[in-house]
Length: 168
Image 1 (cartoon, rainbow, N blue to C red):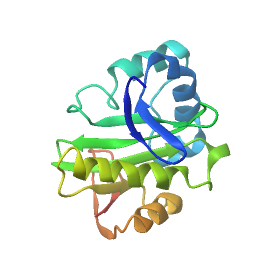
Image 2 (tube, rainbow, N blue to C red):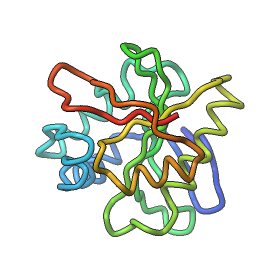
Image 3 (tube, one colour):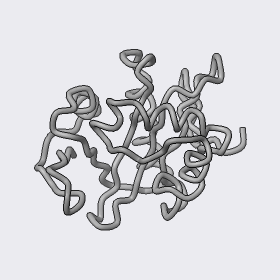
């Protein structure tokens, strides 16, 4: 498959394309995504297409990095995103993930994040991969802990960030 990054037992983790605009719009407009990650300001398909092509998930990331689509092998449905991002300002590489609410609690985020961490270590040569999450995001905290990470400290991702939890 073109754009394939990693294959797991149930998922194809592949590059996002403009064909994923409807999914990206649905994911980024979900209230939980907005509360725990941010409001990306996407309000229509054209904005989602532009975000896929020019946004921070894909544009400006080193080769092999970015947020990727999590596609169910069995049905072809895109259920979430997962990937590795280079946070240049922090000199960190972090694993990131988000899943549409109707696919929560089915293990997809863990399966994808675990595979992406292996990919990062084996294919990209990363020695350290961290996790970043909102302090109150218990689902993400639990997943990061299941991946073997522990809370390190609270950091500011930007001037207006009230605090992001760093796990490693």
